Length: 322
Image (cartoon, rainbow, N blue to C red; front, side):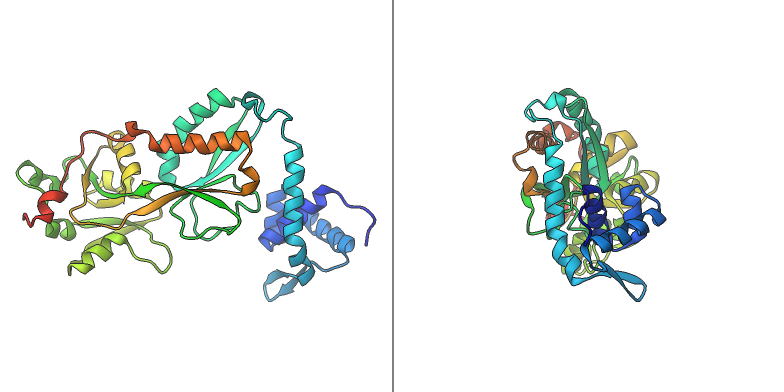
């Protein structure tokens, strides 16, 4: 084993174990692929172990590498903490980029207000949003993100979570949509809603839409003619076509006025999903991170995002109005 090694070598080892790829680890470390290959050779010499071995087209960690993974992450986290300003309570002196993973609609509706709040309290800090994903639960533990916001089903057992709100689904259509003509006299019937052409948000693998589930229980089926990856995309599509979007209330109402949408209550009871916030315990007592959590929570709880001109379609339909 080599006599010495530095933190850069450990950071490279962490990147290699997290990605299982020399190319991806190189991108994370801002190195060329040949440079990362050379670093992997140094790591192998240092620890006296192959660390990553080829299995088919993939590189897989050795038993020694798996045993090193968590201690290396913890050591890097402690080393990062040493670089924080001594007076962490002085938020104005914090120079940091907070990486928040959240649904696209959260960044669209609340990104600007969060940025303004950050500029007032931590003018030397920055905010970066990453898109929501359901296949990367280790990002908080590995330090690749600071905060996770979304309707995730499971989290890394090491993380701490907090319920932010329940995500009620609503309908959204463009101004002047044919579906809205009946509003002048009576609410839209459930059958009329189901018979419309819809834009849907791509569900999680193995899961269906809660709207389709609720309709199926009543023997109804809607026609989803377009699937898009996010609520934001669905609302844009609805604003430019006659498609009906059934999406998160917070995002729909936050965007409605700016892109010409009418938001209405769904004419059927649909299961709502919880919106949660998650973070790693190493950040729990950090004043800057605590401020970020409080700011996200207060922004999402702010009643001013609700638009007063909302059509109510549910009551009549639930009473059987056609």
